[in-house]
Image 1 (cartoon, rainbow over the protein chains, first blue to last red):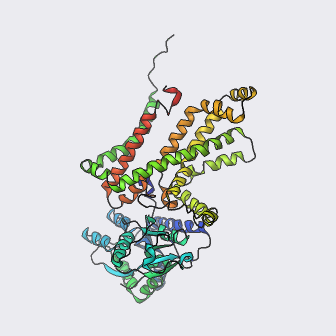
Image 2 (cartoon, chains in turn red, brown):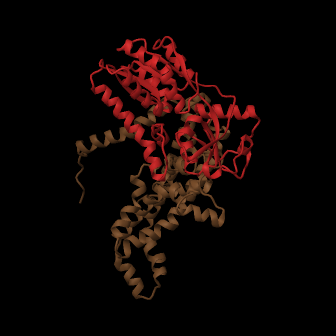
Image 3 (cartoon, chains in turn orange, green):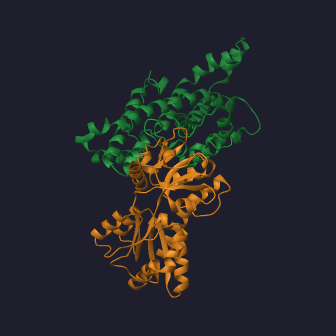
Length: 269
Length: 266
């Protein structure tokens, strides 16, 4: 039962920049949670209809914070708030009646479920992510390619198969014929990324955007083919601000929106 | 002379009942969703058996380590006067206050491969604690030992010092006094402290997954197995949780009155 309680520990997105102090890593891990909570509270308090609420997957944190700034600069009369959470808890929030206008998730299955429940009509894929073999900067000499993951002398981490990044990784490694010598199956991609950034793990399989969020700490060794990671976006059917919702979706799909995603390491849809 | 029989005060019974309900309700909730027909199959899964074995090894090792290190620490805190004793006492309770995940991260910064102590250790001996069973034992000891230290220190502070003094006056060496006089006096509290530490170690999750990672057979204890299966196979998670409840309740009730409460039940 303790485990269940600790399971409430949110999966967070860590913002970019250098990592000079290890404690700062933990701080950065938690700051987005506080920000996201604050945003939800702020958007609840600001009286609904003036503000267009976007719910986005936590792996979109960096990109969608920039997206918000750029969108509001282009549309000064529209006020956007973005709240971040794990894709499956976003689905739960929408099902419980969150007054949201747009939803963007990291998993096509979640969007299919939302469509099945009648919350969205036409989702559009707006970005893709690439699974990569990543190494801690200290271990770049030892990690040379997919076969390095089979080296029992290296400390190797994957996501647990119960979460998407772990399932993708296991499938892709099987496809590549690599029998990884795994030392830990981390409960989410953020904690795996953190341990790579700390140098406690030598190599692992994460998303390209995770590496991009830790320049100087983690490097991409090689892309890992075989996983099709797609991000769909859709306005909600009962969005309080339908026009603004449509405008935001269009902006994400526009050249400017796509260049923000590209800068954060996402691929084109 | 007979004690007059009185009804227990309603306010105590009422509040006590509310308190008990708080513990009973989650258990009822758990039993209500338990997949009874699949229970045998779920509880004897390889993952579960590995986690059970590892949980027993690591929680017992942690309880033993906490006893070997914690009793002397409690003795020092109780019997030796030195500057900063109050501060040290507060630091000992730190793992009870810190969220275990933060405790695990702190252990990583200290004992990890790039940690303050972990880096020289790895360079000198090649021993890397994170992602090993030793890492689990250390994380468990870190969170469990305060329970033992606090229990034992409380007992040491409340026993009659004159008996130790008398033994010393009669010529017993300090270590003999500790072994033959002090330890027997605090026996019941020591046993309670060991049981508390073991129980806390058995349920440890946050520090373990952060410091030691999660690998079946090496670092995946029962709480970790519950957590990872909760996202995919709820029935398996419930079955493992139930296994933990049965394990801890049977150990605690078996010890109660005979060993745990010591003098009272004998």
